[in-house]
Image 1 (cartoon, rainbow, N blue to C red):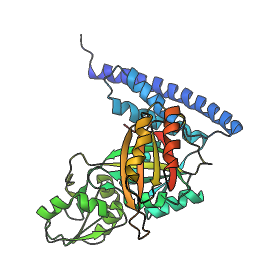
Image 2 (tube, rainbow, N blue to C red):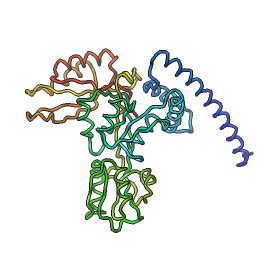
Image 3 (cartoon, helix red, strand yellow):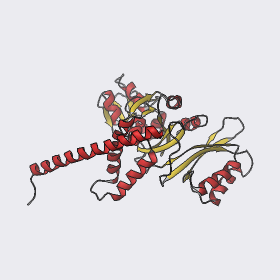
Image 4 (cartoon, rainbow, N blue to C red):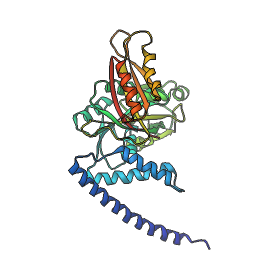
Length: 360
């Protein structure tokens, strides 16, 4: 005989009480771990350990919870337990409601101290100065490619990459009134304007387009003038009291942005291997025939796969370039170490940005 709604609710309430008791037991154990870490001087946050735990739970999950849901739930549990040891102070491109803020929460969980910044430069400065323990910066978009400002700042920054997270980005047109009529200007981050240009050309061909420091800043500006609109997340719309006039206006339905999580090496050393890792580096080579080809030889020789290869002008006036490279593996693996040692010998400039667990 099928159970009634009332009976099912009683069972759910009882399970909730059991879950709460178990979560508090876990939190108590996490607190004990934190006390040991204080004595050892080891970091509170261990991204490779958390990645391994979540991956193990996803593999063992019998359902009906989805894999992504398991990851989200346990990340929040870990975040809440971590906050008992010491809440992480995280800098990101603000104001409230940006995709960078979402990325920070997706990586760390919501139990963090937020430090919204006015620019990517400020995120780097705040994290390098120790005002924030960690920073979250956009690195690459699936539509528009690499975020050049982040790449340029890595050249001279003392920060290293200890993690990454990838966010499905849905851009929405936001304004004070629920209509497309009378929009004279659209404000958003330059990347968002580029990612929505086909939609804007079709639906708002006469509206001026203005770059803002962030999409949430564009939403804030749209809230100040009824003839203006912003391109941002629904969350930003709620933050500034705006209507979603058009949903998901990005030209690529599967538009994603990859974010890097950065910190000073003294805040956290390079994470240990998680079993699914990446090494990011910046190199330059002498301007001679075949120099770029030679970069690939050590990787092939030692069986190391390259997953990303981007170039940026060195701004020397000599047509020289920096190359941003991602490879599969971890610096603790002998074949990776051997390949990079040979690669370094070919380079005029060589800098490892970090070795860290990759996001799914």
